[in-house]
Image 1 (cartoon, rainbow, N blue to C red):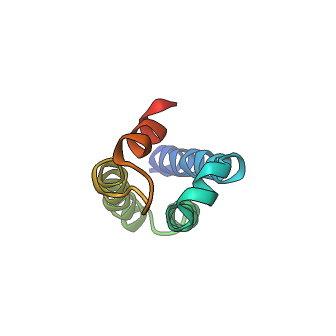
Image 2: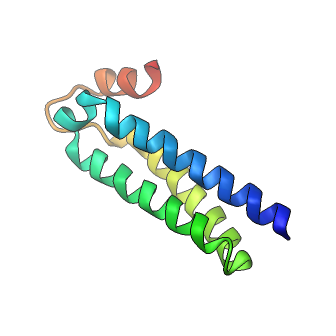
Amino acid sequence: MKKVQAVVSVLLIASAAVGIEVLRTDGWLWSAAPLHAYGLIAFVALDLLLAGISWRVTRLAIIGSALFGGIQFIAMVGDVFMGQPAGIPAAVWESYLLGD
């Protein structure tokens, strides 16, 4: 079970690190879609929380991580199709999300 805990925790920390890097470097996100940035802050916090929990309550953390991963995926796909901020054309938003 220690290997599972380590893998889950490393993946969650890696996800949080990517989110932190996006928050730190993406000025356009903060200016054009601050609510999306705040949502990303919540995702980063939950990633780190689940990474910590994985060492205490492994089964709960694994189930939570799987559910949370699905929610993150749905949120990201939803952003592409329905999440453009007011005043930003859908094509520009999609290009921003999928361009890099």
